[in-house]
Length: 304
Image (cartoon, rainbow, N blue to C red; front, side, top):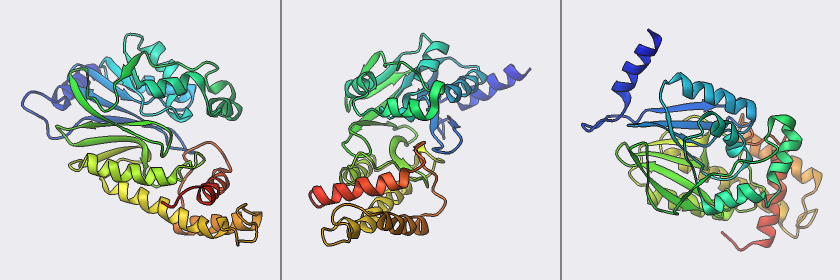
């Protein structure tokens, strides 16, 4: 009886030729730190899964949630190569071996090479709950070209360097739903260690202009919301840069280096302005890493 009810609900929810008022989207959010989202879209011929979660145990929970829908997985798409979005890809591939895994060539290359050492660091933090060998997507997304999976057409757009070197946003135009990956988070402390906040701000401006008709946004971290989340992410980055700028100035007590006292000062300012913002990453000292990275970016980079 339960399977019959689920099937009937899906018949109502899946977009038909007559059109549906909303796009059915499922979500698994891992516990903090991070509230890492794995999302899935109910397409006419199956589920399109967006990202795969951080750890092996979390990915197994995603598999259980996907199987509970009673629908096949038509494909898996990866927004970017950060460890918390690709760590579960092997678990999903084992559970749904016929589902193609899509990413751009640049994203797949980073998964293959771990050029920044992020996967090695994540293994130190999570041990056996992070894959010893990464699973690399087996289908290449052409940058900025639409892709059709499970009978549903998604528009893609490439961004970076910003939140990371290269990232793909997905947009479903019929229902005006945007999946920006980690370009946008909802009330989360981002990872700024790649020192591209200026590029990230430019990416957010491009994201808004590229998809002006979007009405629902599903971020890589935190709850879904309206496109106003783009502006909130911009404000956070601009405020963070403003808090860090004085301690990155050559005339500051530590010069362009950040002293422990300056770290504490900036940390207090950020946490007062943005209280209860969980870390997107497992690093317990993420805030201090962010402050140090942005100070170096401001001291060595061109004005934004």
